[in-house]
Amino acid sequence: MPRIGIIGGSGVYELLKESIARVITTPYGDVEVFVGWVGDEEVAFIPRHGKKHTIPPFAVNYRGNLYALNLLGVERVIATNAVGSLREDLEPGTLIVPDDFIDMTKGRVYTFYDGKTSLRVRGMEIKGVVHVSMTPSTYCPEIRNALLEAGSKEGLQVKDGGVYVCAEGNRFETPAEIRAYRLMGGDIVGMTGCPEAALARELSICYATLAVVTNYAAGIKGDKKLTHEEVKEIFSSRIKQVKDIILKSIPLLPKERKCPCKDALMGAVATA
Ligand SMILES: [Zn+2]
Image (cartoon, rainbow, N blue to C red; front, side, top):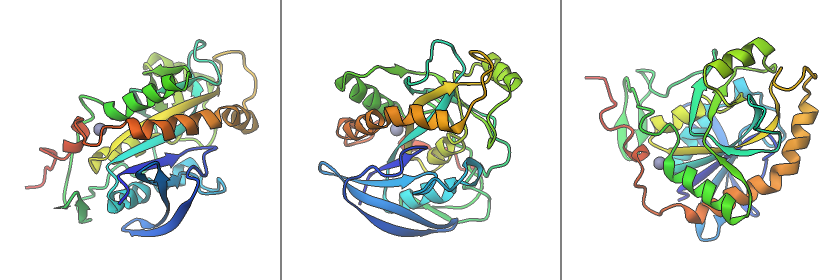
């Protein structure tokens, strides 16, 4: 049973050298998961946008992906995201492990616990209303540490911390939106980090992400038109590093979880 899952964002459509495709049936539809090995650790991989980048951010099956990983026994998810920078000092090409997020999406499904669906999480049957906490750590501290340590072992600069703002998309943000996100305390902006991170917490799955800054967000440096081509180009230049850091972070993860994520459902079920 894989205990570790990876959700690859833009540019990361394959990761494991040899893997077997499995179709997992979930209450949210069938999900294709690629299962392989990293050293002696069995790992499950899902390309978030599909193998050929055909799924736009709003249409990603966030619940299906995470529930499929939960059914496989995954306890930790390492994700990647391509992001725009809200700060001049976070240049395109920067690798960053955010430590918090602001969810500005507006048309997604934000919870597994709709009061109707019966779910199986770590051997428990849960149905009803659940309010998980995003404190003390929005992202899993153990995965964040492993990513940062893997980066430094590879001799790569990886920025520790930053606030990820998730925009709805599909269009890129307006300059006024970017000014607002900056005032709110955002450092980077993307379209796929939410509700993924919170849904993982709802299944008491540890979750953290390695983000790649692919461009300055609107109005941060000049008013040049932003193209997806440009985003892809910067991402491709960092893709090997992203894959290396993720793969090298896996053996650095403690075998037993000591982080609070594993207890996310304790005291969170509101239904009487
Ligand atoms: Zn954790």
